[in-house]
Structures are given as C-alpha cells and as structure tokens.
Image (cartoon, rainbow, N blue to C red; front, side, top):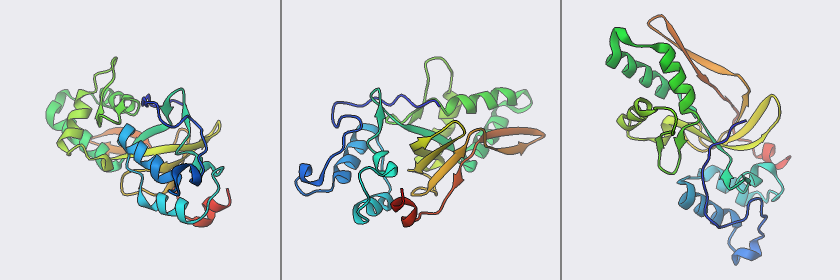
Length: 210
C-alpha cells in the first residue's frame, strides 16, 4: 500500500492518545480537526465529529484512532477519482488532442495522478511525472476537492483497505476498497479505468461495535 507524503509539523505525537482533561474540557477531536485543517488543509465532515464526540466512542476505536494515526511523519491519506472528474478529463483530452489522442498515455496519467496529489497545495504534481494536463483539468473545474474522493486510512490487510471519506458527495461515509477493484468509462471505442470504492451508509452501531 502506497501512502501520500504529506509532511506535518511538530504538534501531536503520532499515535498519541489524548484525554479530555488534557484539553481543558474540550473534546480532543476538536483540537485535532483544527490541526488537520491547519497542517493538511483537511476539513473533517461534521458527521464524523458529531458521531465521535456525542457517542462516547472509545479512544481505542480504530475509526477514532485514524485521525491520530501517522507514520514516519506522514498522515495516512489517499485519493480516488469521482466518475464526473474522470469523464471530464477524458472529454478534455479528446477535445485538445483530437485524432492524435493517446489513450494509453491518458490511462497512465490518471494512474500516476492518484499518487501525485499534493493535498495542502491542492494540486497534482510529482517530480518525475508530468501531471500538468491533469492539474489543468482540476484547475478548470475550480480546484474543487469534491471532484476527488479524499480518504483517511482506517485499517488494511492483504486484500482490502477500509477508509473514512472526507470529500465528494460521499463525504461522511465509511468505505472499503477491495484491492484491484476498478470502474471503467468507454469513450469513442477506448476504455479508461480508475480505482473504485464500495460505500457503506453511516451506522452508529458499526462504529460502536469496533
């Protein structure tokens, strides 16, 4: 599993468990969400904050712990594309390159883009791959993070990864990616694929039983 390299500054130690008393009566998740917004530009959906703060969920719950889980100074974040965004990228690619359009190159671009999103800068960029076309499409659509499915890793094994969704029209949903699961879009005889998530409706019991 590859994780994005989103650097953090010194703040809360990775994996540290904080009690309410340490935050002068304020729920620790409030402070943590403020930190995630300042450091990573993340907006944690209200549905998660309400659930964790009002349900008395244990600090050991894996969904709750995911907000603190960091590894080697990086936050466990990934992105998936929405269908609308992929469809837009394909259409613009066709409009710009016409008969010269290389859809194998477009497929590679989309795959590389999944590992080249700089979250705090809200753009696509890597040192070794030219993602400028993908970033230009993102710019044309207003750099709206709801065009992407930004997820927070909860847990994973050899065949699946479980996430909490932070953006898109599925924000607030838990989700699972069965490794290798993809959706496809057919366009002018070409097939473009992208990784796809399985969504689950929010369930209070689902979180409490963990």
